[in-house]
Picture 1 (spheres, helix red, strand yellow):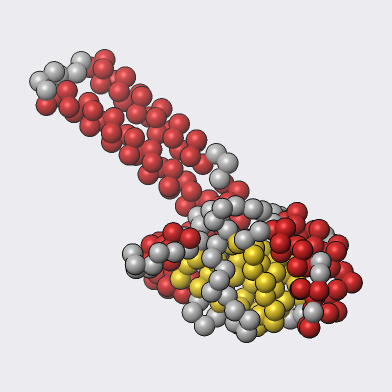
Picture 2 (picture 1 turned 90 degrees about the vertical axis):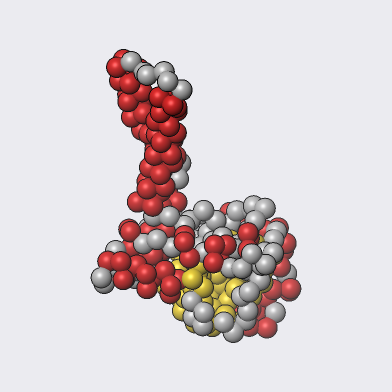
Amino acid sequence: MPETQQLFIVQGPIQELRVSPDIAKLIFDLQTEAFVSGVFSGFAGQAGVAANSASVAMYDGEDVEHLALLINDKLVVGTFEWLRNLNVGDQVTLVVSTIDDGPLFAHAILRSNDQLLWTPFSVDHTRRGWILHAVKLGLLGLIGTWLMLGSFYILGSRPTAEVMAWTFVFSILLITFVVSMSTMGVMHLGVQAEAIFQALKVPKFEQFRIKPYSLLRMRSANDADRFRKGHIFYFADALSAHKKKFRL
């Protein structure tokens, strides 16, 4: 995935759109008349180079789909969950970055009519959010430890002062270990999320919480595909709650 430091906004209607669960199939379409017909005809001469660059930027996964779309006569590629609801003509705001010798790369898609926001897989916490998530896990371990200690009282076996002291030390070490291990390798995802929210002009973007507003959590249990919509969010609802919380 391209670096997120230089993200910018592209707005307009989707002129053309291709969605595929397979990168190779999407790249094949980019390199053939299947994709460069019509409004894409002016792009045909650059298709081979751009397709190769696009394939490097995207990533495969069981729960993701890949798109190539045209907006303002610019080609954009990206990888997200459940892209089947996107259609030609949809008015969108894209958070994008450039790919050397290639198309634009989409880091987020915000559709205007329903304010649905697509983000990449696992990009749903800021750095602060990941730390708080890790602290919650640590606290659960801490509570479990002290519940175990409390069971000694229930069973009539009173722990000694030494056992209590070692339990306290173990609890501190446990929460420190859980927090450090839980955030290891994921903080770059928080950086990506913050860059997206900043590009979308979210105030206090470092503290923006969007995960509670995912379609996975808010859709009916009767939606058989809701587990594939965990990284599609009700952006307007999340932003409204964020502004209310911080009195913005």
